[in-house]
Image (cartoon, rainbow, N blue to C red; front, side, top):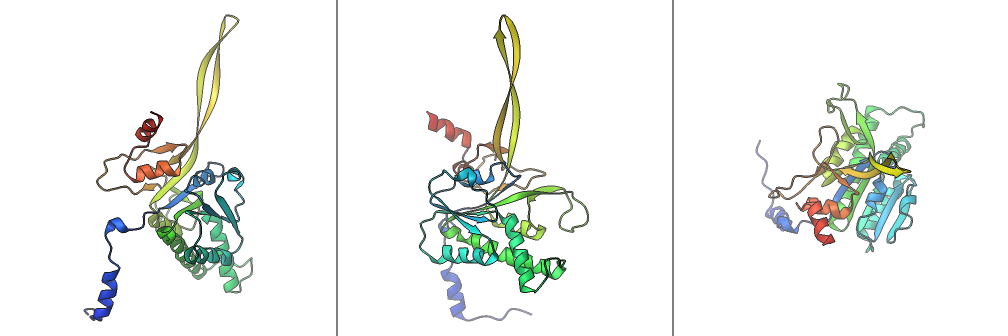
Length: 280
């Protein structure tokens, strides 16, 4: 059956929302995930200041305690998380960036909310319906926060999760590594953001020869690099949306990643060339 034609008023309302693609909000939405201690929060601290960090039961702000321009709000329950959105949406704040650290723990707050709403005991097992409700509220509020990118740069942080790739989940056949949240939420947030990066540490050893008393001795020096995977990968979930006309080959990873470096790649520019030019 063909759809019924609606009023001209509805058509006019729709057309008023059409804008040139270049006028779409220029702020970004990014997902950073990785193992503990691999530099997730430190990377997020390079986002434009002033910055508001929503610390969702993480208490991991020690590494950024001495950085100016960062405020923190502890989020210990779901109601506070919702209040944070309305504050950022409706108030005239000073902030340029918002960091949610982290959504893996936020899922636990969502589970607590579902239990309270359904009068469940802490020991009660989640039913398929409960998981569906959790997925619904998580996706709704992740999208709400993502859509703050008309005013702020938004950064989601998550722990890392690996899946073995079996037939237990219909939507997860191949092994993969991505954010530690339920599969339906992972698929949703992966599609909702413009940049997805995986933090990791790469170790290497440099051998040097030292002359002592006429004898040569080999010395090994351990080097540690903090990196962010951003290029296409067969196992890790990564993504950078860049201009269609750009022929830039996105690097496998970035050494000492920052917001600025990610923005260069998102604009289709090479990070190394820009760094060399700055040094000159």
